[in-house]
Amino acid sequence: MSSASLPANRWFVLVAVMLAFLPVVLDMTILHVAVPTLTQSLNASGTEVLWIIDIYPLLMAGLLVPMGTLADRVGNRKILLIGLVTFGVASACAAFAQSPAMLIAARVLLALGGSMIMPCVLGLIRKTFEDEGERAMALGLWGMIGAAGAAVGPLVGGALLEHFWWGSVFLINVPVMLVVAPACYVLLPRVEQTTPGKWAIGQALLLIAGMILFVYGIKAGFGGKQPLPIIVLVVVFGIAALTLFVRKQLRSSEPMLDLSLLSHPAIIAGLIMAIVASGALAGVELTLAQELQYVLGKTPLQAGIFMIPIMAAAAVGGPVAGYLSNRFGLRLVATLSLLISAGALVFLAQSDFHDPGFLVPFALAILGLTLSIGLTASSIAIMGSVDASKGGAAGSLEATGYELGTGLGITLFGVFMSSVFSRAIELPSSLSQALAEQASRTIGDAYIVASELPGEQGAALIEAGKAAFTQTHAVLLTAGAVVIAALAVVVFFTLTEYRSLSRAHH
Image 1 (spheres, rainbow, N blue to C red):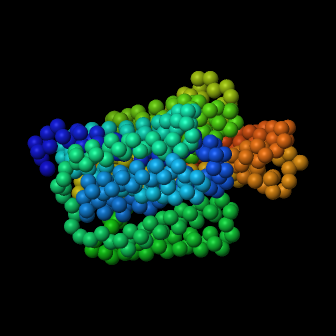
Image 2 (cartoon, helix red, strand yellow):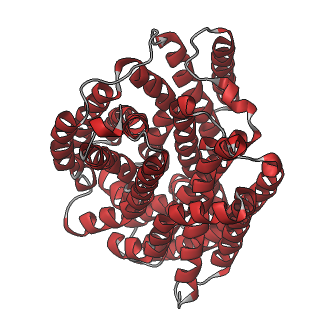
Image 3 (cartoon, rainbow, N blue to C red):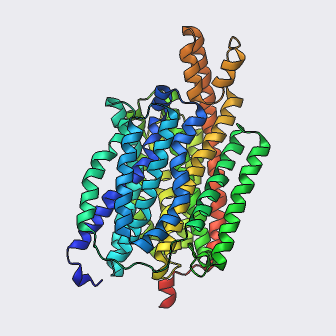
């Protein structure tokens, strides 16, 4: 497709696919501030809340690669349109869910729609922009929408919860889809190049099952809710399915996922960075949203506003990372950005949020900026190491890294939060065994138990919960800092040989 045959239309295509992408990213973070409201309205347990938040990135992680390859076979336009309709219907179902189970089911549908939309957006940008300079600009704009969307999620969620019931955080997607789906139907090219060959549904199911079992096993294991033999069994099954998938890929003449991509150290480094940085960002946002609402008594909107520095700085990180890595080299930029974000986390762990002053918002901005530079650096490392013909496969690998990072980040932070919290809380002695057990799980559970107790007892429990959560939050952020600092060291040594393909050709 020459640029002459796509005059002004290609920028409209970009606008259409970016609009399609926006609700998918919003949905990853919009729930972070809605958790307290939602927990109380649906009377959801801590485990149910984790599932409501987590099932979305979890399923997306398993579905992205299969859906990306399906779109290559059938055409991006078709899969994108089906995805948009599915996403719209699922949003309406989620908004009016009457129980935690119904909401979890609706989130499953949302993930299905989202996993159709995400790879198609990248695929369409890749196909629409033949010119390298234009494509870089299009991908930069796409990245900015991604960062801004994830960033604005908590703010939009907070603003909606000020005025409406919790279901409004989902209902907002419906009008967006009603505009975007017809726009994509009209604007996207009817004819597109597709990859010949059949779509191996068996391989797809293996990958999805393996991912979900493995991640669920890790969740359940850390949560300590299931007996150990069951957890071991689930993890073993997950690893077995993934191993089988890998063996099939290596033997197949038409593999679903080109595993030769993983022979580049830079791609491995990029993937690890994508998983850890997106996980840290999601976990920190979730921890902060709970600290701000439960401990400092802020409304969801105030919590969203408090977190603006992270969001705003994260949106700027993309373009900044591109400029810096061209100037100073990717290895230096990636390593330093990770070390600085680890420092910011240590500072935040020691800070008093009751009196944030100027330094806390500043540290939040530094954290958002450096983690976002780290994420973009992972993108540059991955995309710079592959030929254009493999851009789609590399793109779905990278998106899988983000989803997996977000899912695991929320899980590990949530589970770690719960275990630190239950050790830190000093419960009033008057509580019955059953209530004491429930109240020591999470601060949300402590609030639910407190609401059933007489005045003074309830107030004492809430105070104990707040004190325990402030300790928990300090431990969590410090642990996050240690992990990111370790990652910086790994990246520094993995990227010693890094040269982007385009540079290697010159």
